[in-house]
Image (tube, rainbow, N blue to C red; front, side, top):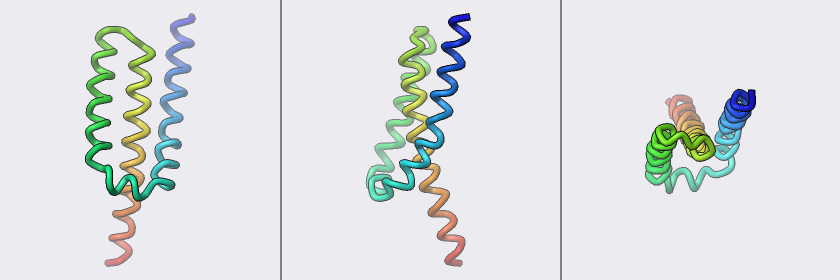
Length: 91
């Protein structure tokens, strides 16, 4: 029962990463332009860290790496979607 509660709580926290990433995309436009390469590297490293912690069965670090990856990828995705819409409206 306690393990199921941990999983449900972890999924809820990970789901919060989506609106947080979108909020960051709105508020940090300049940083996303300058550091896009570094954000992609961060997502890649967090993915590797999540896989390793899945293997080593360390739930806390697994959820931490996944949360960072979700927030970062949503920030980049939100920024790229806005850029695509602006380009389409200019055509």
